[in-house]
Length: 225
Image (cartoon, rainbow, N blue to C red; front, side, top):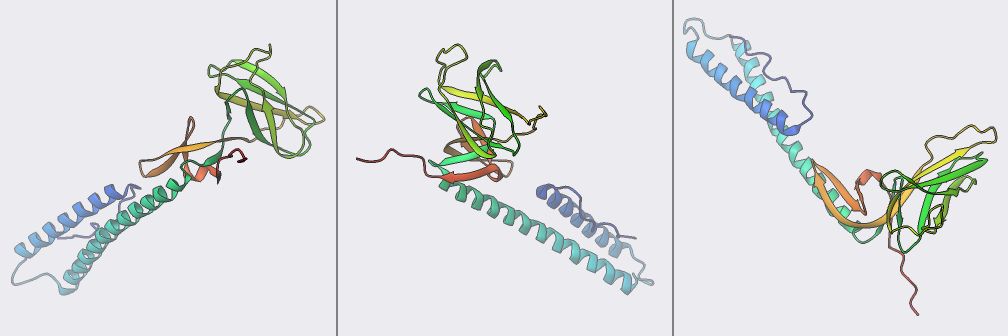
């Protein structure tokens, strides 16, 4: 009876699924090996070399199951370490790349990165329904730029505080548009949570993966007198 082929490792990226598959292979291997020993011809027992190879397969499969369990433990420890580290972000100002801006107290800061060679730039501010609220001139200098919005629309009407979407457009001297101008959002981190093994930080309306966080700093505080 051939027992080869039972030690292949499944291709699934899910460690728990891999462990389950290996365990099933382990049980099948043990059942087939026991059955082979029970039904072998006493006058012509299983070849010692073949039997040894099968025992080696048995040992390798057992090691795979053990290693898979250890990998699960390491992944769990890494996730716990990520969550623990992210707790230090709570209450601090976190910056991510996002096209949102927060209008608070009638003022919003719009941060973006301008490439070199910009001749003209425009900032469009949209409400939650995608309607144009305000158009502002953008800075044309290269590098990080900040434009302040006073919270009024194109007719001078004061808008409600909240989150708005920003679109930054720029062209060079030949009116050729630049693509993908990065826009940045800053807010206070107020929650840490996990989903499907990934740690997220809630920053205002955003649920941000840890690897998307660009900077973390203490929030601005007014000077004491």
